[in-house]
Image 1 (cartoon, rainbow, N blue to C red):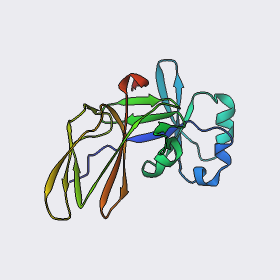
Image 2 (tube, one colour; image 1 turned 60 degrees about the vertical axis):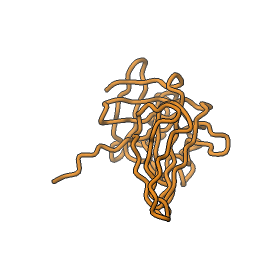
Image 3 (cartoon, rainbow, N blue to C red; image 1 turned 135 degrees about the vertical axis):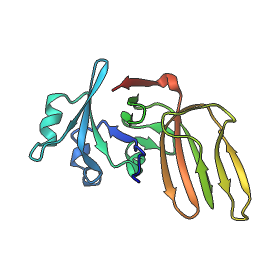
Length: 181
């Protein structure tokens, strides 16, 4: 029996200076998207294709796919709770792309415990006080975690394994742009 879960993908707008940074280059995957009016087109980097050549063609609307888990380090300012680079999140199970622009304020929700079971996924709308997780504490008590904010969940990552710690990034839905595949 195979795993049918379709993982979200994250694409980040990078400039030529970003592409000189080895720590950023190490997170790039071999595909990119181009935002064009009312649609998004997905491409794979050819074996001999040069990233700089791609950037020279359409630098304003190219987003590079990056490794999902550590991607928040490239697009999120944790102290100011805002997006620092334009991003596009691809939700393959919804056949949808969600774009969030730079300088957009976000709500950061951190959930931790001995064991955490999330009820939400990327692309879900949440309201204030919605149940979004169950937490098993160190004393083996089950607690319900309720959302401290409202909006659209655009990114979820695991920050640690023991204790289990998740970071959810929530943005006002009106500050996003959605594209269908």
